[in-house]
Length: 146
Image 1 (cartoon, rainbow, N blue to C red):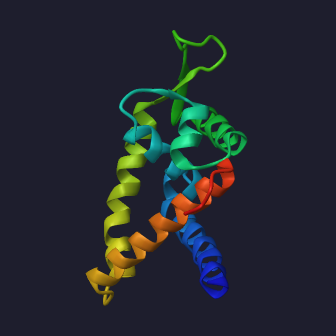
Image 2 (image 1 turned 135 degrees about the vertical axis):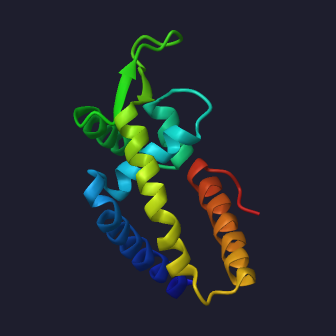
């Protein structure tokens, strides 16, 4: 398992670097792209803390990326009628355009990465990663791992 975790760390680093290169021409990084994707996936605008929760990320790190996205015009902050201090993050037209362009680049990239990998192997990897995530989240929350 130790070797697998080390391989995951290395793969994650390579994935982020390759993603950065893929979307650089759009003014994005992998982190910005991930935040935009989380905004798109949400049913309605959310505060940064909720986006961070949905991403499984640290709120402060997501806030830093959101601040960058605001400065560059990809997202805007809107008043939150339920909480004065927790503004809602909204996608701008520029942000939606950049995200859509990133996703257009994503499909051929994913197809290249997945070529010659059996669907069953990808599905098995997804199941193992989902189980690891559940166990790690339980451990972080102090729950008993079963």
